[in-house]
Length: 67
Image: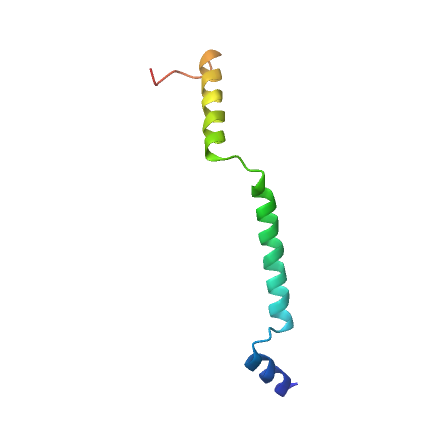
């Protein structure tokens, strides 16, 4: 088995543990990408915050500090 491991390292073939690590890293990356794919853009976040601010001011739950 020693020669096998030396050859694998020399050829750049990952070990079983390295393959497992690579697969788990890819699964995590896919999960993050899928969760962020439906995320709001910056412009949509800004509009949502502005709407919440205006409704808070209208309903008296927030003070209008901008004017």
